[in-house]
Image (tube, rainbow, N blue to C red; front, side):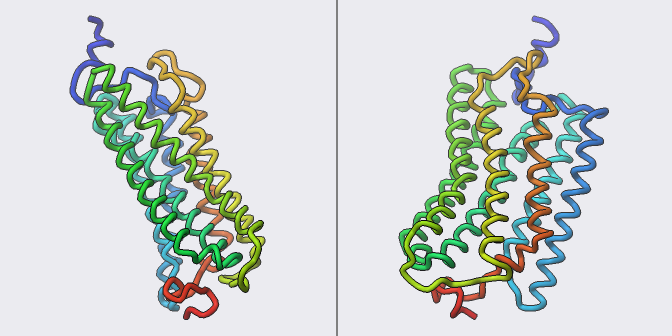
Length: 297
C-alpha cells in the first residue's frame, strides 16, 4: 500500500478520497482570500448588531437583523476553519467542521427570505397570507429545513467515519436529497411573490415598513435569485459523480467555490444593509395575534 493510500485509510475519521468542492485550502492562495472575507463578514456582523441595538432603543424590533448577524458570525467561523484546515491538512475534524458550516450557514438567509416573502404576501393578499393553512405550511417547511440540516450534518460525519462503500453511498444519497430540498426552499419566495401578484384581492391591502412595495419585491427577488444560484451550485455538485482527489472537476476548483459562495452571500448581506431592510420590512409588534399589519401596534 502506498503512503498516499494509507493516508486516506488512517482513522477514523478518514480523509476523504474524493475531491472537495473548493479543493484543499492552501496558505499561499486561500488564506489571503479568506482573510478579506473575514473582514467583510465582520463588518456585516457589527453593522447588523448596531442596527439591532439602535432600533431596539427606539422600540423598533427587527429580529431579522439578529439572524443576519448570526449568519455573518457563522461565515467568519467557516473562514477561520478553512484557514486552520490550510495550516493542518491532516486534521480531519477541522475538515468535517468546515464542510458542515459551508453547507449549513446559508440556511439562515433562506429562512430570512421566506420570512420577507411571507410579509409581502400578507400585505398584498391578507386573505391568503394570514390563512391558517399557510401558517401550517410554513411551520412544516421550517420543520423540514431543520430535518434536512440534521441529516446533512449526521451523514456528512458518517461519511468521514467509515470506509464501507455501501454506507458512504447511502450517506451520499441522503445528503443529495436534503440538499435538493434546500434548493427548493431557496427558490420558494419566487412562487410566493407570484401568488401575491396573481391571486385576486379578497380584502384591503395592508402596507408595512418604509418604501414602495415594488422596491421590497425587487430586493427580495435579487436575494432569492442569488440564494437559488448558491443552492443550485451546491445541489449540482452533490449530484455529480465524486471525482478523485487528484482528478478534480471544474466545479471542485477554488475559483468555482469562491465565485458561487461567499461573494454572492456578501452581495445579499450588504444589499440588505444599504437598502435598510430593517426599515423597509419592519412590521408592528402584535401583528400575528391581530392578523393585521395596519391594526397592530
